[in-house]
Amino acid sequence: MLDFVIQAPTNAWGYIVHSPQSRRTLWFGSVMHIWSDLHFALMFPLLPLIQSDMGLSFTQVGILRATYSGASAVLQIPAGFLAENMGEFWLLLAGNMWVSVGLVGMALAPMFVMLVVLSFFGGLGGGFQHPLASSMVSRAYDDSGRSTAVGTVNFAGDLGKMIAPPIVAGSIAISMGWRQLLWVIGLASLVFMAAAALTRRAVDIGRPVRDMEETDGGRSSNTRLSGFATLSGIGALDSMARVGALTFLPFVLISKDVSQSQAISMLLFVFIGGAAGKFVVGWLGDRFSIVSLVWATKGLTAVLIVLALYAPMTVMIPLLVLLGIGLNGTSSILYATVAEYVPANRRGRFYGFFYTTNEIGTVIAPIGYGLIADTYSLSATMLIMGGATALILPVSLLLLTHRFSR
Image 1 (cartoon, rainbow, N blue to C red):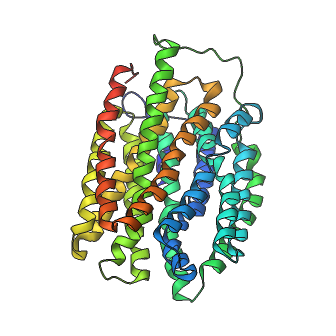
Image 2: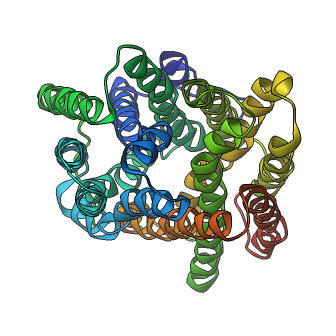
Image 3: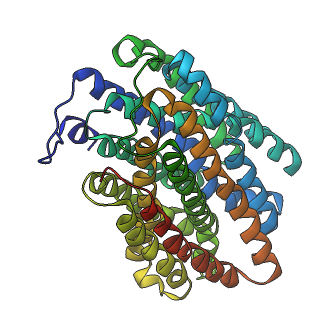
């Protein structure tokens, strides 16, 4: 799939030809994203196991998830500034190695408090992947096909998410606990990153050129920054929907009298849909407006979050696939659109700002929805989540006030 995307041309007629260097850069960014998202997606199917092992409440589950994902926001802006001077290659490798060490530490945590502390430490390394891979690939494909290329990197991350549930389900089948699994994944990732360092000459495109001309295509600087701020707000709301749904969907499935192992395995269908959504919406982003794509994906998401409560198990698999498309598809067009508002030589820092605001949603959602579930019920949480997701639709209309290249 990645090979098709990398080599498939895309210009004004739907086709693009890029140099082997650009394609190798896209491959590197995509593989790094697979590992990065695997590191963080493991937490979703592991939460029921950790909850059972440590006797956690829904609020504690939310705190753990929010700490791990929220920590990745801390270094995103500094990473963006560093990339402008160093380039992205070594920072992407270092970030994944950092998270790998964190996973090994989490596996050794004897109690909940230590697990939260170590998850924060490990999560810090996740701040490198999203802004730097997006910046690197958007520069490699700056002439044309940028939305498709960034969407491909985004899609690749979902391959990492897709393999997380089967890995966890397989570990349950062979009686491997969550601690042993984190240990194995952490060590395997460290070995892979060390090997990937040998590819630098083939894939590294260097640091951004400082003296590039910055053109605004007829838009004032204030308009561009206002558009970027609006886009960042939509990204935060989108993250709330995505992380909230993924955190509590396993518990919704368990409430339908399926086993813990089955509920974890069924998350795979959400990630399959998410991968398809990221790829397809990334491709559509070169052809349709962002507002129309946000309405299509987030409108679908809001409806399906509520339906997941009441749908019988016989229809849950197709529902979860469609939900995954809605949950994850929006991000591809949001990520690619950042480049519409910011100059190429400063994309690292602006992607850092963008992903940091997104992480606000990943912190608020698990804790807030966990408190609602403990105070009222899991059903109330999902209903409120569906309503909050629907708020993205009117907010996205603000983008119509900012001029677009498409």
